[in-house]
View 1 (cartoon, helix red, strand yellow):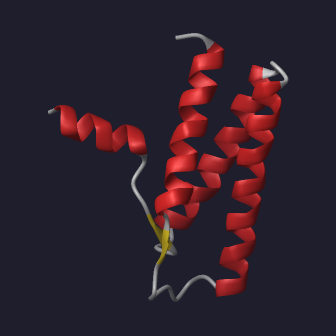
View 2: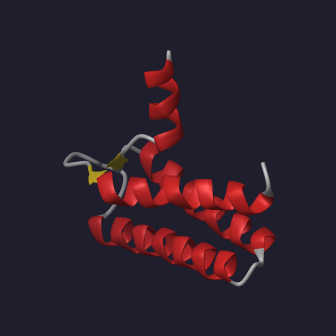
Length: 95
């Protein structure tokens, strides 16, 4: 798979998460305002990834979307948000 296709795949997966993400009602560890700030940073990294992809700077785009995914995963591991990555859903449905 080319770097350009890989970047587009990861961007699509992150966009899917932002369309389906749910903030947990019970999360003792994370303040709601801080949660929203981290989600904003993740979304900013996603927008950076799209910008750099469109400029043909795929390495920078991949790094940006990886930061986005890392922030989202961290929030999920803390129990602050609920979502499932698109690739994991696809693999499950193929079984």
